[in-house]
Amino acid sequence: MKKAIIGKKLGMTQIFLPDGRLVPVTVIQAGPCTVVQKKTVEKDGYESVQFSFEELPEKRAEKLLTKPVQGHYKKAGVNPARTLREFRLDDSASYEVGQVVKADVFEEGETVDITGTTKGRGFQGAIYRWNQHTGPMAHGSKYHRGVGSMSANSDPSRVFKNKKMPGHYGVERVTIQHLSIVKVDAERSLLLVHGAVPGPDKGLLLIRNSCKA
Image (cartoon, rainbow, N blue to C red):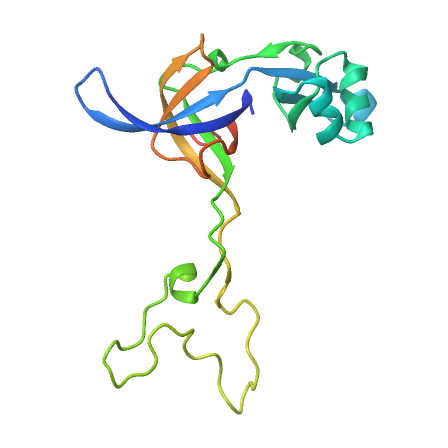
């Protein structure tokens, strides 16, 4: 991984490209992120960088963060933040504690992989959750939106594991790969990415450079 940043989904809109095409874009507040810790092979066994995102006032930090986490920020000499994430970057050694990383680490035309948490949809049936087909919708059917056949009666006389059934749907970690950056607004720390990304507005996002060419 060459570069990464923490962001927040602000919403979707659409813009015109130079060639006249109208494309949907997701507006992401990417950073600013502060380097809290730099791990090394000698001390930790591997190289990585810890980024913090969305600084908190002192009183708010005391309420939201545990004392060990507050001490972690204090040791680094940086302000406590709502989010702390670690990335294994190819050039981890080039970062310094206290350094601020902004949206301009990315450029227009680059492709990125974006990870987020999908919207929660509560308890849902098999049709909505797994996109199963409905039963006959005629009046005499009496079986319209059920799960369907569960298993054979005599053998195996049980329901196999991983049977697609009703249950909690959503709130899953999802990564969308190879999204292109349409525009970078360094002054406002904004990235405009072509297409949709997982999660609701104000949802946390991890933006990394694309792992596929």
